[in-house]
Each structure stands twice: as structure tokens, then as C-alpha cells.
Image (cartoon, rainbow, N blue to C red; front, side, top):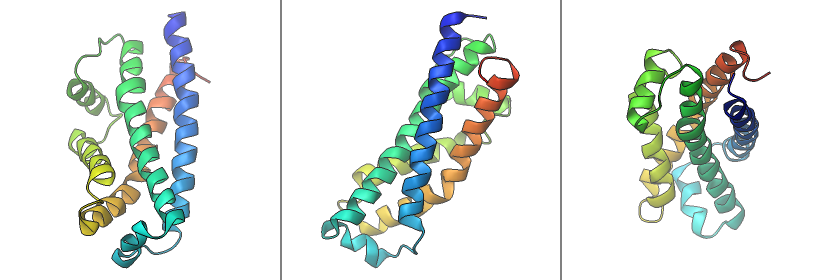
Length: 158
């Protein structure tokens, strides 16, 4: 067992667990109440809501990035695979049953971009992206759990 890789994976497990906890907190803060397009239009005047939405978008993107760009390549190394391009890594993860769909994961990356850039100009695009991101939180959690569970099964984390 490669000691450096094991330490990296242990660190990444802590990071993704913390990031998921924070994402779930932000998700709850925003979506415990029904979100409407009218509520989205208050982002320019409701600083508390704007901050909550910003935290959710940031945490959504951060966890997705950590999983796809850090933990997934480390997991592939554990399997004896050489990580390559982002899309190739996703394809391997899909073939190995960790990722349900490459297309769906790429859609999540697009949502992240819409939440970061589009809401300034178009409330409706942002509203739809926010609702889809909320609906996708279970998918991100599922992928994270699948990666961590597989690493636990292989003895890399406990």
C-alpha cells in the first residue's frame, strides 16, 4: 500500500465529508422553505438570503470539484489505473459503477457555472439551476459515498 497515496486519500475523505456536511447545511437553510422566482428576485435586496444562496452554490461546486478532480483520480490510482483527462476518468468511474452517468455529472458542472455566472442577468435561469442543483445533492452524496465505501473496502480508509 502506497503510504503517500493512503495519506492523501485519508485527507480527501475528511475534506469531502466536511464539504458534504456544509453543503447539506446550506441546502437545508435554503430549501426548508419553498423557493419561488419571486424569492430569487430578492437576491439584490435580501443580503441574508443572497449569502445563503452564495454559500450553497459555492459548496455545491466545491464538493463536486473535490470529488471529480481529486478523490476520483486518487481512487483510480488505488485501482492501479493511471488517471488521465477529466472526462476519461469520469468514463472509467461510470464503467466501474461509481458514477451513475457521465452526462449527468457534466450537467452538474454546467449547473454550477449557471449558479455562479447567470443569476446576475437572468433570474429564471438561476432559479432553474438552483432547483436542479438542490435535486442533485443526493447524486453528489451517492457518488461520494460510493467512492469512500470502495476505498474502505480496499482498506485505504476506515
